[in-house]
Image 1 (tube, rainbow, N blue to C red):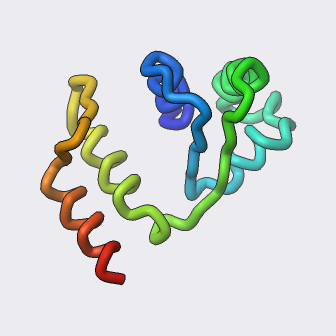
Image 2 (image 1 turned 30 degrees about the vertical axis):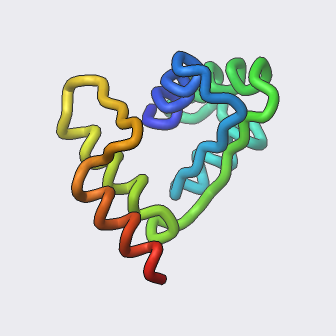
Image 3 (image 1 turned 90 degrees about the vertical axis):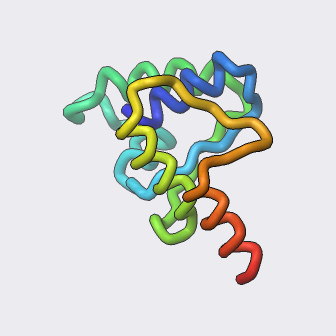
Length: 105
């Protein structure tokens, strides 16, 4: 559902082309390769498939949780907030720490 909502948000904001990353390889593989009709969330994956076919340049990749700590933090932060939030030029303190720590590496 998080991937679906992210796709809808990116389309609403005109963010194209875009790449969606997830640490859930099973979900990414079902989106990329199909074969999701019999899964518990097949109806959501079907909708993602329809959107994907109509959106050239939309890509899906599997990555480890460690590879994108900022995305993990934002996902948890988003679950705690009921409002739609987006940041431009400024960011929450937790993200600033993760981005600055990554620059040092």
